[in-house]
Every structure is written in structure tokens, then in C-alpha cells.
Image (tube, rainbow, N blue to C red; front, side, top):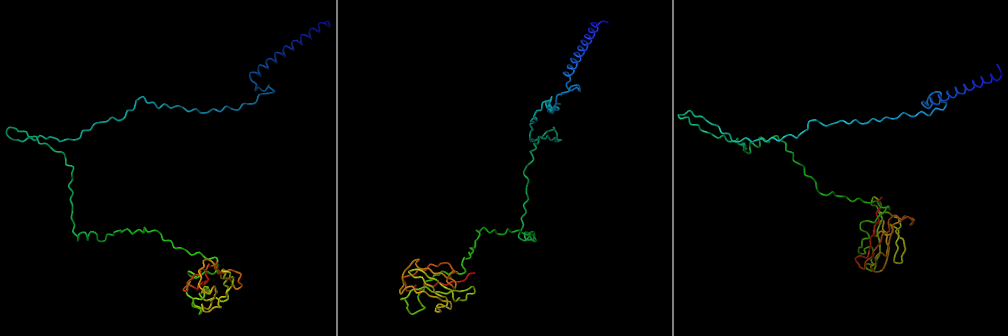
Length: 270
């Protein structure tokens, strides 16, 4: 065989091999297109999630083949008088009709009358519940006392205006006086009472003017009664005269000889 003949055979074999490869490629492409999830596909598409199937309601027919009608109204006749024929065996066969009236609807009621003795016997041993009276009056509120911020407060409605009795000056004198008492009601000696007003600023010591009591003190204001309003103020203080033991008390004076002494007593409250 010549060299040219061998070359033709090789070319033919290569041609057949190319045709076979082409057919195989076309077949593989068709298979992959039809089923891309086959194992031969080196790049399979992602797996799709399952499709959710929702349950659909099933319509139930409630239509009846037989229509429903409302209950029919039936007229009812009321009973009326009944006529009864009574046959009397007499000559001539006379028939007499006797009407029967309707039954009477009234029922007679028997009423018993009891005397006092019978009523007492029937009610003996029976407990009668008598309602208790209801108190409809408005509630009463009792005012409560507020504790003072100071250990001493003035007694009663002080200052109390009275006539001068502690000295012989009589109406030619006007002043303020009083005492200091502890919780037991005993007079206290040695406390300071401070007075200001009318150009005066002075102190008095309890227990130095016994004409008003064992714990008495006194301030001289004027040689005659004079009317003043809010001009004078006094306050009880400790023995040093620095710490207040009571609130400030305003003293009003009067142009009256029967009111020329203003009594102010201090009472310990706690």
C-alpha cells in the first residue's frame, strides 16, 4: 500500500471519530436540556423548594329541596253556651230545651274573723324582727390639736386685759405681767421673757415679781393707759435669753383703767 493510501484511511478515521463525537455531544446536550438534574450535568441548577399547597374550603350546600314555611295560624273557637235537650216522658212527648250557662269564673273566698284572744294564741312564740333605727345624721368630726413647734404656749386667750392690782399706782400705770408653768402646773423660775416695742427692748426674769405668783415677771410700759395695736411683742426664752421657748406674742393695750394690766402666762405643752 502506498503512502497516499494510508493517509486517506487516517483522514477517514478521523472524520468518523469527529462525526461520532459530534453526535455524542448533541445527544448529551439534548439529555441535559430535557433533565438538567441528571448526574452527567457538572453544573446542575439549584433545587427548588417544594410548593406549598393551601387547603381550600369546601363549599357545603345548605339548600333544601323542601322549602320551610312558618307555622300556620289556627283559629280556636272559644266554648260557648251549650243547649241540652231534656226529654220528659209525658203524654204528647213534649221536648224542653234547657240552656247550660258557662262556668262561673268567680270563686267565693271565705274570710275568717279572729278575736283578740285567738290572735294572741296564734302570735305567741312568734319572733317579730323589728328593724333597728338607722342613724342618718351627718358624721361629727372632732378637731384635733396640732402640736406647737415651741415647748411653751400662752395660757387661754392671753393677753388678758384686767385692772392693775399688783401695785398702788392704780390707773397711773400700764404694763405686762404673768408667770411661766411647767407640765405639772408648777411655776418655773429663772426663764427670760423678752419684750420689744414702743422704743423698748428689755428682758424680765420669771420668779422676780411674786405679786403675780411664784414664777411672776413684770414689764412697765407707761404711767397711764394708752391704746396701742400691735406695737408690743413678748417671747419666752431660755435662761441665756438666746433660744426661743415660745412663739412671739403680740400685746395690744387699752386706754382704759380697768384694762391697764395685760396678763400673759406661758404654759409648757411638751
